[in-house]
Amino acid sequence: MDHLFNFDEVGAIQVPLYGSNRFDGGPFASFPERQGLNRENLIEVGDLQGRTPDDVASFFQSWLYFSFLEEFFAEVEGFNASDFITTAKDGT
Image 1: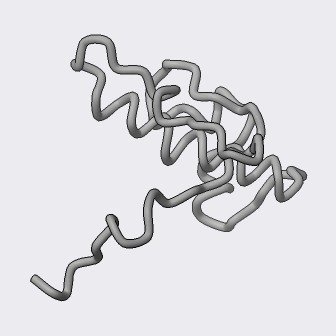
Image 2: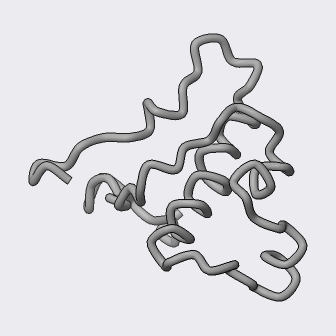
Image 3: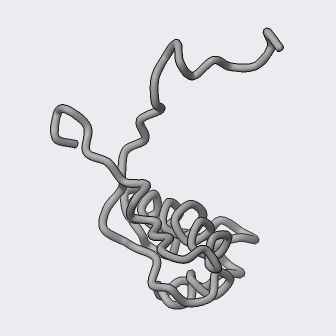
């Protein structure tokens, strides 16, 4: 099993939290529309519809990470996707 990554050697992976665009608890597939985006234009042609890169990063992180967690663990009592957010030692 030497081909598997050993997380004990490097520690936890730190990923920045982009913006405050949080999943609202609605259906996963309609999240773009609830955020004022046309899903077909977004997915099919990559039309960001006037959003800044930071807004787009926040949107995708909320939709494809946090909302996926909420959908996947929907039946787990006490599950909260916010538990996956930590603050680094430098305050970020």
